[in-house]
Image (cartoon, rainbow, N blue to C red):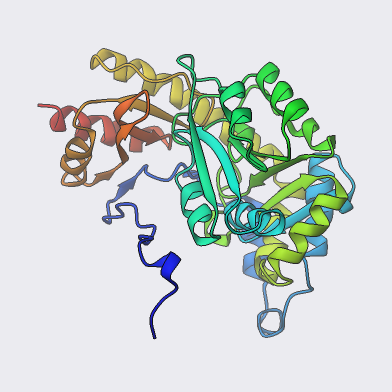
Length: 343
């Protein structure tokens, strides 16, 4: 049977995932599993797996609400924050309508636009890597997406720019804070505005990427519409229990690992500078290194058992490597592979 015509030219999302013993390509927490989440995993029994979870993950909503300091009615959850983003597009946009986002940003945004039948307007970041508020507003987009700290650059949108965007946007502002736990400043309070949803994830600082748990905070009216679009069972029962335990009991563990990542990031930046490489300013648990021929360099690093993410022809940046921060032994291996790859 032929596929939908609008799907025929959409490529499958498939970043290079050659199996390497040192994998720094996806910015996840590489320091292990949160202790309370691990305890829940060990204590899980067969009867908890053979039954459906409770619809719409109420216990996880309660845990997120306590962590973020909001009412549960302001929380929705999903299978990773990308699922929440996808559900938000379905909830508020009709096919053919426009979304706008900075360029470069999270690569899945153009993909989500295509599979939902939307048009999209990428707006280049400013030379200082702040968002171009006037450019985003000029698109007239019904939904404007901003990722801060931004993936893949690690740069942040300024508070002044975000406030002006929210004040003047014709529709919804979707603020992606997947890396908020590593940043100097969070903008979660903007979710109190009637036109703002803030998404986050447990895949990064909390070290639960394999569970696929994300959430959004926003006005209850917005949240209710996203709930309709997401369906009742997007979070498994096991994922809900483990994530709720991490949010409730493992905050000191998470914060310590985040601080360790930032210390390692500073050390990595210093080492890269000694190689003559300058990184972009970053407030995430990774660095972006502009480097001509980055895809070939990344391939040579993979041949040396180290995987980093390569980008080609990014707007305003060019070719670049994105290197995640893990335990220093992994960073030493990555730096060694990079030195050899640059010869």
